[in-house]
Length: 565
Image 1 (spheres, one colour):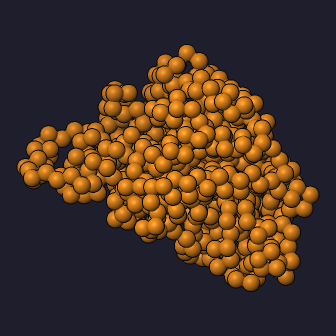
Image 2 (cartoon, helix red, strand yellow):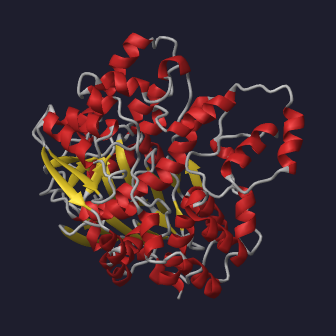
């Protein structure tokens, strides 16, 4: 929705400079306010209360500013009889009444900053909006707004996390001294948790009432996200998740839908399916073609919008798609695969949960005598060693590879904190925290807000997710069983039964065609971060084993050149 910035000193010039670096996040209004000890700034993308809802908010020497949407703010006004008309006024009134516990009352996507004698920062339970800070009292929606006020250096612990999981993991960022607030947490000098997902199975949910209840939650979630005084469209890939959201949304109003494809690469191009759905729901449909020229000519722009390296290649077509959308708000399907075990690899991991092998010790010894540098070998090593096999659907470099690729001693990437002992629900919890929270939601925010567009994710609704965590494995099943049952009312079987494809495109073909992979070694000779011989091994083997590894290394190299060379 907006950009926010703050600094714990009276300095409007610093605030103005920081806001100028985030003007793309909100061009409708800008303001800076100070109280006795702090300065807050705000760039606005006007969606709700267009004529009223300007920030920062200052009253009784308390400063407040927020980015996002509070879907239940009108309900809170009525429930607590608040003297408020806008979201920021509701936040202020609840703060005065409940202190830090006010955040538990909110339903929405948000980051919030309050200065009341000291600085407080808050983030929603999914981490839908980014918030970065330093420990000496600077915060901002984007890292680039903080960089002018610190000395740039790389956080090598975060680099290990990036190699493992496409991104640094909160509270780390790849910049030393800049932190990001984790989802469901607040900061008051220390990071503290105000919300986390829980697994409490409820025996009242049977198959029959679960499908209907889930449908009701999804419809309610979509209706919430229709809030605002601007037109709302929907991203449409032609897969079941985005198609279901677009179909339900189209029951309330005629909508615009948007898809992207790649001419000449039919195995990646899904526009024919998106077109089929658009005709079925009678949307005004827009198709975008993404080319090798677009990929390379916009590369620096995407790196700038990304802030820190995040190695999901789909950031690039997403950024290009966003540049062609003439709306301020779109809905998207993130979260469904993780909630309903939609990725094919989940089936493989499910097979390990209850597996038993009588010759496990012998097989472990055999495996260690025949070591290979591939993920499949590592997965079986973990299984035979009785270690947790699943460590995230988006794991790229496993620890042994990180140790080999980094010249300096690598941090052991911490994964245990994301495992709860919940069986298949560990997959969901883990991936909500890392793959969704650190990668997919950052793609939605950073790539779309780069063009002043707010992307909303109806599957990532607290009520809906808590419901899913209360289901038994026999009801949830896998392969998006429940979503497919709901979709029978809204979509043709041709879409429901489609094999999942994912947001793939020919980035590696384009890198190889332009001989770009040598760039990894060229930059490393200047940075001296990675082991050159291992880099050459990965590049030589190429697409057969290391497609994602290559992208992770290439993206980091391009980012490092931009920031440090």
